[in-house]
Length: 98
Length: 491
Image (tube, rainbow over all chains, first blue to last red; front, side, top):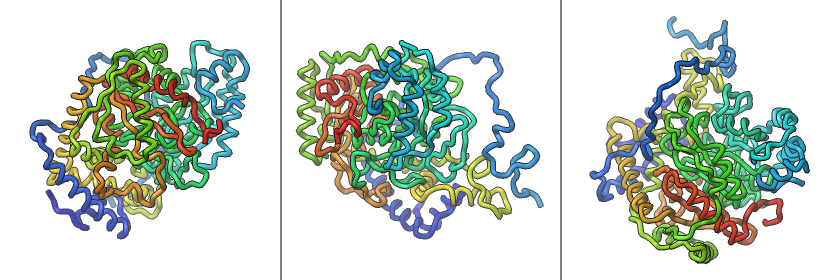
């Protein structure tokens, strides 16, 4: 397991596209200490190697053919109505290439 | 005058033309405006009154006709502000209705309000929404919490303002606040109700749930909300929806009910202990076979860290769309689209959920996946296997919802806790078992102590909601605690 430190935690936050205050990072470091300790304890639980990772509570079996019918579609105005910066029917962002 | 009535009672009044949907709606909206618990995001006054005005001819076989209801603010409601109680969505107006909203509209129930929650449903205290703390209407001193994340829906339903309030339940977010507000809180089987339009938090654990003030009301609402929604939610079950309302008759003769010794060890209040024994006697009196069973204490204690890892990991990807581009705040002065996202997410997310996202991201790093994420998923599998083994022999199990009748506000109570009291850790988190395993689970009022109500929880086999409804119905009838609300003077 990758040892956590402030640098790694900041990297994780920045990968998620946000930043936090130094105070918030300190609280988080403390939480990491607790969680990794708890997770190590989990490693001691017997029978872990006998089961697969559970990704959903149970399978939901469905078998159907979708009708060849026109589906729902949003109007352009609807798509744009929540964007803060719109120009000529498109969402405006800073230039990607200079 | 009509506040504090159940769906069944209001239906009688509506079909007998003793009251109109418009009058009901108007009274409920007036009551919402007097809320002192900070439970409201948006009152849908115009939409609700306009819709209620159109309801003229009562539908005798439709209990929800003209009934006002409340909705947690993490369900998409077309044309109505939907914030998730987060600043990143504070101006967001959805362009479609969640499936449950659509179904309630078709049944002509009247949406009157969007209610507060812990930010994006990722907390359990009722303290982390962007509008601040939501209080418990049973406690005017504001000392004891109502719990979360469906805090606003619980408060408004407990105030008797509406007989139905939608919530969501990823770890216990309906069934835990139900105990602190004396409500019937149901989370059905995973996949029984479509999640389309519910803001996803952790889809392998997320459920639509709701509060009512009677078991029969809860059964009828499930009949309406359940069902396949395959075009929108591939995890919605194609199984036939049962006639829950008519199947709830209190018949539990010969049913086998277990209680788990290791959960009950964490009970702190003697009143809960005594009540539990009393309820077991009532169930036996009604013909059920009630027995104690045992479940590995270490496995039960693992619930909390396993929940943290799985839910946080799933949450990171589910909230990647909150980018400040299609919706969300645009802070200004950005020179790249990455900066648009960074600034919007830094300003838009609250402290708690940022920390949870980072925990999730860390557990998903390639170097950590096997010892964190996959290990958590394996422990989940082991625990679910053990619980399902119990349910091979028993129809359901019953447990207190919490070790305490009331729970004080504690600063930063949603932080990860270094809990050394294993018994407490188990009893305060065991409701998550039903999320891990996708089982139907209901919280039901069983007592009032010094003005504070409390619930017990009943969990059954997947898709066997009828069993949990019937066990709850027996207790409701025997204990005479149907339709608790603050306005009825039970405080």
